Image 1 (cartoon, rainbow, N blue to C red):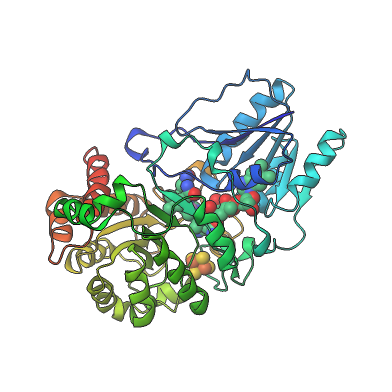
Image 2 (image 1 turned 60 degrees about the vertical axis):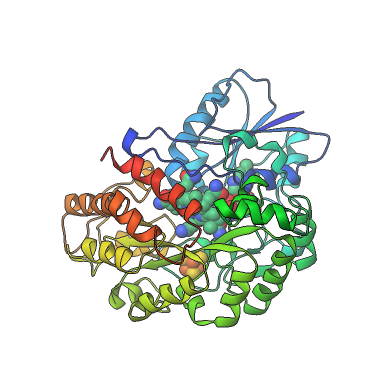
Length: 448
Ligand code: B12
Ligand code: SF4
């Protein structure tokens, strides 16, 4: 028996078609809980064509909201050929009835416990229309995702790792807590160690003298050459402080460079920040979102304190750690001046990299429910829910101004003068890494 797992990619306008050349973990997790006698193949449509003629017994699709319409097209194509199709992920877990118009079966929730049951039913010819995970998976029982099924040549040589699921916060634009639960579910450190050991070896990246020579070019060079690069995809790597400190101690044993997501308040926890720095943290991805307290309170992210943003950036930089900042525009308290305020903040605080998105009200989130109640959502074309397009009526500007303004921020922040000002500062903060990241987006926005 053979199962084809597909990560769909929609067609996009040339100027919007930027790709994070990252692998992913969801389908490798699904593969890991597939019985070993079944052959599993993973196809990433962002980099390879789907062969609809391939002889497979079952197709499994994943989908986020913007890729859901493409996933449905793929499903219909396979079903025409008589191949049954299952779909899972955050979007269809929220809208299973929509998905059922296009697929045979929808999996609601995490795959790890429910997928083996689905496969058993499928073998017996009794696959149901809906499988709903019963609660949340026990984080200490997560399998090792089958990364070897991803084609390495498509991606940056960066390994992805998940150490925690869930989040206790209630940000109104985010679906994580509802989907993964309002509580951090930490994996045991020993399990994370077992997984890391399959990806890297412990101990120094290269011997001392070679490190000295390579560091003449860049301190990061040995890590890039040895591919000791890690992205911890958790929504918040510092949510559980005690767990985070243990995790940092473990990372230190591996001598690698890593980055992950954490709230801006991390800057004021000197012990954690030193741990980040010592363990090889190259970047913290921070959702600043807005400078307006009103916006932050509406979105349930009142724990962000805009008056402390500049100081926070400075403190993180002082530890030699860069910042990937994200901002949102189109919020209810955003007037047309918001675009310039973000540009100025990025330049003045020398933010190492920054992306600004138009808020997208994903189905199932509080923001979606609120904007729907207020009758402000004007598009349910899911492909446009990619944060580059406005899909609801903002309050203090026109839709056109919002889309133009967002693009203006990207163009200015990724202009060469801004990049050089932000990156070529002293002391250096991983300039090799950040120049590469910024120049990619410079290249993209040159067409805008
Ligand atoms: C890391 C991350 C990214 C990274 C990298 C993604 C990657 N390549 O892995 C980056 C920064 C690039 C990114 C980009 C985006 N992201 Co993102 N991201 C995440 C994050 C934090 C972790 C994703 C992850 O791997 N989770 C762990 C895996 C195991 O969980 P999972 O994917 O949900 O899979 C489980 C189940 O859903 C289910 N399942 C999933 N697929 C399938 C398939 C089958 C067949 C079955 C049976 C089950 C199943 O089983 C899996 C295992 O339990 C999540 C939030 C979160 N904590 O999950 C947001 C999240 C997935 N991202 C989100 C969004 C919106 C985006 C963007 C659209 C943002 C933007 N405006 O550009 C882009 C889209 C990128 C793209 N590829 O299309 C939303 C999706 C919301 C939605 N309704 O679709 C999330 C949920 C965050 C949020 N705000 O709510 N993202
Ligand atoms: S945005 Fe981050 S902090 Fe807020 S609910 Fe989502 S995962 Fe949690």
